Image (cartoon, rainbow, N blue to C red):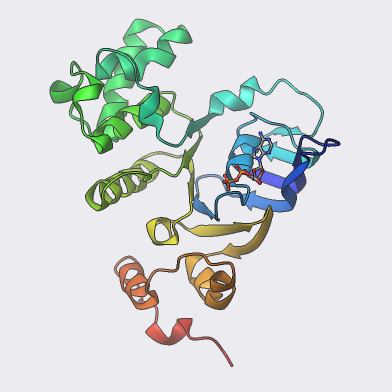
Length: 273
Ligand code: ADP
């Protein structure tokens, strides 16, 4: 399911003194099955973009298309889309409440009246995909787990629905460096193991730049850069102008080179005069 946004704008509280343009004339295509990163400061429009794609809010102007379904500012029954998109919001572990990991992961499936046999299969599968051993964790209270493990439980609850598109909002927020690395590796494996479009939203370039195929840089509601990480990093100066963290370029290339063959020459990031 390709995702296409055409001339999309979102204005909150339109025609009031609090009117706020959150997204402005955004044009974007996200190819089915790809893994992309959306990056930008707080207030740049990232959450608005996620909510638009997942059909939780409507655009003020423009058209959104996900797979065969297109919609604009007019209200439409978007439940079909919502079923195909899994959103892992920030700090998803705050939503955990059941007495066991197994019950928490199956909560939404049960609410949607999935048959018990299917629920059991889906829970086991989802736990495997997020790297939680079923025998070891299924019966434990989620509240006894580490922050990273709790986040895996929350992510498992979303992927148990087998969404076609998975959106993760700041998936590493609040985790220590080891936990961050583990969650990012897990997301990468998850993406590779399933035919699923994955959208990672972050304010940290360092976290996601070396694991996505394309990056979208949002600033004040507009896409200011879009391309492969290699293309984006050529625009170092522009990124610095808006004050986005850029990891040490050399380190970044070295990490990228571990995954890309043939490697990128180190001087490719120097700006042309
Ligand atoms: P980000 O996720 O990048 O932090 P948001 O999409 O949350 O950005 O916000 C974009 C802009 O829209 C910000 O200026 C924010 O204050 C404003 N905004 C977001 N949600 C609302 C809302 N429900 N009502 C009014 N303004 C909002």
